Image (cartoon, rainbow over all chains, first blue to last red; front, side, top):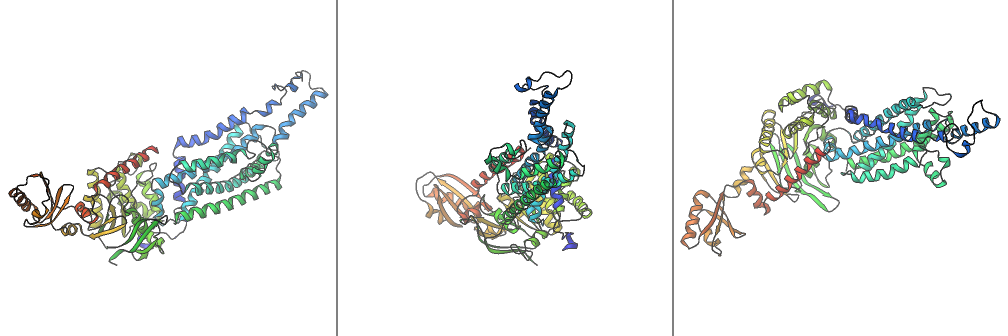
Length: 302
Length: 332
């Protein structure tokens, strides 16, 4: 058979072709490509700059009443003024762990953007079903697993590219790396993002693959994404949240991913914490990907 | 191997109670065009989906080129070609890119794939459009591209699910020619489903008429039509009386059925028999209000075996196809 029709016996054949088909829809369509980049920039610009929490406590610009009492500095701070300044200046550092809220927030966007990219990529399988493409592929020798992996892989590659881009853009907007930052740490960011995306996209594909309509999975996903976004440390540190919300955040893989990214980029890196983060995200990825892939596999070979 | 496809008691039950395909038996021989004819929901697509290993049969078995569709599904997929009902080509890719994408699904090395793609593009006369995005293709061109994609692995048998669904008459006839060419020039075996009577009649060597998941009759279209025993004369009279017996006595009349106030008459040599029926009726004081004479088509065959016409189902199907087209456009 092999020499007559040239078919390969490699079990992974078709994986790159299918993945690249997904990716082409993205990088070959400039509008979609640009929009997918603009969205995180908007979040960064609007949330990161609009919620300029640092400025609240800056004596020079804040209208916060206690700070008004501090007279404009003309000759350099006196003893008491210097103390106040130090106190309020240390405030953002104390709350967010970084010198400014923008850095805190911009890095939070990294994991957050993956949530959306993997979600939309999950939706694409609904189109593949509706338009018959999925059936077409199912009738070829491509293995069922490869079909699912190609979706996961394309979503993951897209998210990781976006993560890199967000970091570059955030740098232009004034992201400050932590002390002791090493460019190699970026690889760590990609590694943890890889784990998160594999988990998330498997989850979303398992949700969407049974559906021939957009509406149902959309509703389910909205239900999932909102708490995943806000019951995490992406925008605000969990330690100031109510107890019940802290508990939710503790089970949220977004929390660990974001923390890992922050530890690597803007905090004074605590390697023990990074290890814990990787462990949690890794466990999440393995469990969810296994469940997601098994469910999808079953569906495809019913 | 003369029997390319063999199905024995093939059955598919959805959700434990909806029987889409009900113990069908048939076989497809080497080099023939075998057609499944039936209205929407008759079980045609379900059957084809089982044969191309997308669906697992609930009961019964079938082999394609000797491979069991349930146990050796991977082997089946390697040797078959599929042209689905939908336009599955990627709109954002060019014609050539689409064919190469298909070739990757079979793991065909790029060098061989490119040669084959050129040949196939020539076969379906799309060579000059190969670098154009599929978005710009007409319905007929898309169909031809699907055909080319289905042939990339040099299949021994090609499965076509409603190959001309939603195409206008001219494009449909052109598509038929491509399908005939595959059979004549490449000796390919084709299994197709259709709900177009003319399509089954003009293309298929043998037709299986399927209704409610069951095959009601199988045979070459000519034979099926001939088996009806001649032409169909439909006659209506002005008087309110039953003249079945009277008509039945006319020479060459084989059968008379009263349906909705008119008479459906099976007769040999319809052109000669019809005037004698009119004469007999007139002699007995009845006035003929209307008369029609048809040579049997597959619709008559269908009517004979299922007791209903296929036309109604066909109309709803057209609406369905139009809706599908709209969806595809809405995507952009």
